[in-house]
Length: 267
Image (tube, rainbow, N blue to C red; front, top):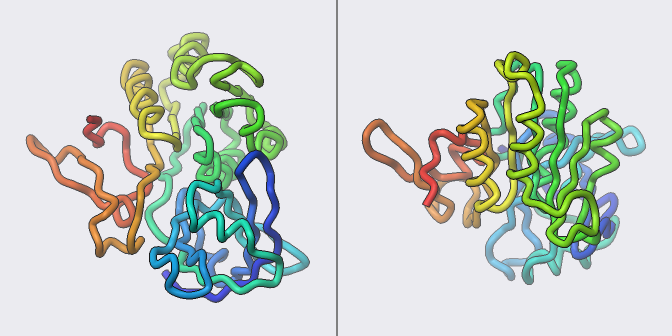
């Protein structure tokens, strides 16, 4: 993990309240792995005080230089400030941080993303494509206005399944329910080495974990948590996990953000 003063290459709106930012970050891009994140100072000084965590969407080559792309949504003052930044502006970034996805050799994979959770999944999909496995990509949002990154995943060859709350795009149903329906269509023999990878709101992750357990499919989840320091010091991002016959609180920024669904205690 290193601190960088990067330059913003681009900062563009891609959907309602959602933006793509590309950063000149050669030293960071070389070490980034799927599921890791960066911790960004959104203002020019200590206001707002805390950095904001953003998944690394992908590593790109822009004009011969390495860059990283993050996808973010305006949810408060910090991200509102971020949306006002322009190409050429300097930005203070810590990264890459955290532990990403453990990529095995699955024959079939189900990537489940809710809203801005898509940001944690594209680099993962790129690596899975290299392993020549079948990828089912599930994305959920409130409406078509909030659907992001669909064409990027489609270009990788993923089978796309969109779910929206109002039915304005794709299916009008919850992602875990649609995931369960698709799994039922696949012969059990083909699911023996299948894996589910997910990122999104906690209620969606809980339902996805239940679907994975019922189908007896291994499942990894990138958790979205409010973080203070991003390096495991402040204890603000803990999640309750199993530890033998008891439990422990794991810091998402240090032990995650990716954890096995089977170790999380859902409350």
